[in-house]
Length: 256
Image 1: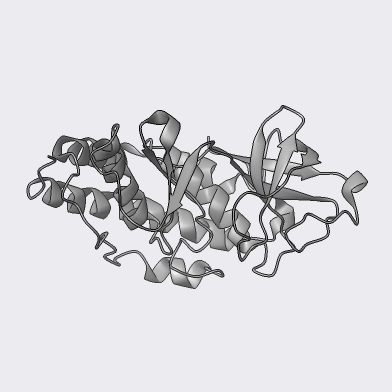
Image 2: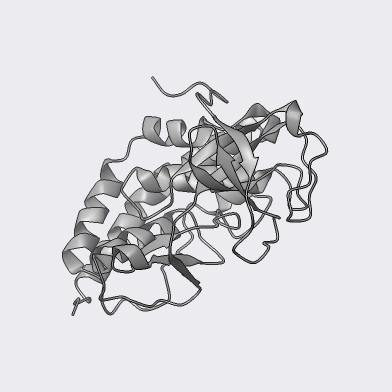
């Protein structure tokens, strides 16, 4: 049995707005402390790019966790009516909603460059990231490097993934089945055995697991069922072709 559509489960509750320490994003993300004591970068559905990008963020991270891709933990953030009319400090004024949250990572370096490839276990993290990139037809790549854990690489800010658009739909998903989207950056220090292991994991992902990953978003974000069904179909189809491309890369890659 797969997930029930829009069955989101428990959410985190916003408790405080915290000062910014990163540049403002196009989605006006802001730092928030939840009642559980965790700090998230939060995006609300009424920012200028619309609620579909929040669904993309949640889904890409959930799919990545199916094969241990280096994505930040995410949560659905409940913003109560108590926050109505409160400014976030990032250019928005709040009102009651369910928002997207990406767990903050302390002591990080934010970059759009592939760096620290030989640090920590990054040679194994990058193959999983490249698999997610190809599987979800990624775009606008951005990474965090955690200085407190030997510069481990993390992927974040996935709002333009899934066919390189803010407004993916059933049609774009159907056209993406056979699209080759191999990462065109450096593969020099990717661990070849991890490429094979990741390919094996992709092959084993079930349709039910993808349903669980794609369906657990709020109905308020207004993603129609037929769009989600088409996305599940696309990911389930692409997982085997992406796995095949990873195996080809493994035969040409040597981590050093």
